[in-house]
Image 1 (cartoon, rainbow, N blue to C red):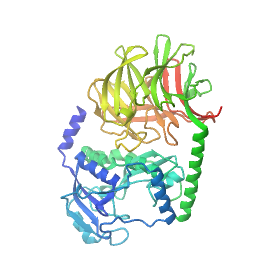
Image 2: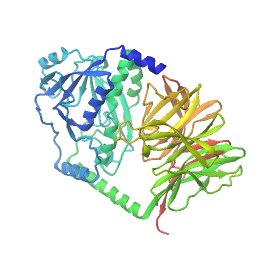
Image 3: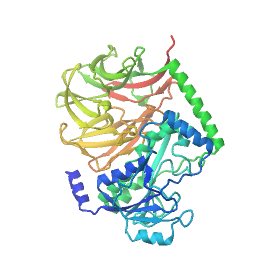
Image 4: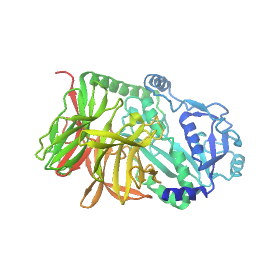
Length: 549
């Protein structure tokens, strides 16, 4: 009902009048998709295109070092993924019929005053900047909005993703920034944090640039639905925090490019040798005496055989026995299926027994009991679904009940019953080419099998350090907790336990209370799932093993 009321209210508000600042109609694919998504969402209408008369119909290119230019071409050829976010697309048909003003830079940062006057006659709410590099323009009610592909607080220039990848930063930041108008002099409207791919800037851009596509449409929608006052209040959180204390970064010189090539080359050689001689293997650790907050010294290892790994533990207690549901991955099949490990109250356990296998990859067996029945929601991103299974013979036989969602790139879906509603937390990639580790989306329903309503603050978290679910919710001393993954240094690097402070149809807030990182054992590389039931606590951990011997 709240979602319908909000949609009705927004429909009563006029669409935002938007203007575009372009160097030409030939624009990068990611910018094209951002504009197209904004048009499709219907909360704003483009009323003006401002073309850079000084550039004409060619794309203005920043001066680049020759060594870097060569490196970029080779990198894109060898490691770039399709679709390429920087491939040029013609936006003329997308923007057909929209008035055009040809403007010219008066100096490095401003337009001719006559051009500014012409733009102001269109009474725009927002100017969206995909060109006019360096321009500072205050000619719209809510200023000029620009998507910054990189950390705007420390990078002065340079290709997107280059410094983050070559220097192996643990994360990469992007932001939607407004300047001028109601947001004078400057305000961050949205900020997101992505994992950095350290072996190729081109591959890295394929992940994080596509993930920035929805920023514009989201905030146009939010401004229209919330109104100015609430929008200003809600976006205040993105301006919080101090910038990292690192040097300013410029476009790479020949020398910097040569050094970067050396670093990348050494990493590629090291990764190739690692894959030849070692395997990464997930295994389980459990304790019936301690929780992770007490340290991991009392945890017992459960080692899978070679060629297999066990991960994503979820637990149920039935009678005096425990049942640990896991992803069991087979290197021979190159995909995972779901299995269950039976354990008695003394910690004696039996080898895993398969319970669900498909011709596509399955993982993260989220299991729960409701109304006297057991249910299972596995990760089935490879099938582009979020599916619900019901147990017909515990714990080994499960039958498909229904798809809760279809045509979604979702991972690690986790449900919780709270305040007489069902809440679905899932890590989603709104753009297919983006990685799903970064953003957490929330949906709610009155009935488990009913229609799921998207939360008005989606994504409720946009940060690779804490978005992706890491296990079932649990209660402790009457407080609700959500486990979350930290995938910043690498996938499955660590996990946190977060206390849920607010969970409602209009808000979600949590605070971190416990962090587990792979620092208790030099042979451990990661830990990314937490399960607690009765006296039993189970986590998974990542180790590197030799292929020899």
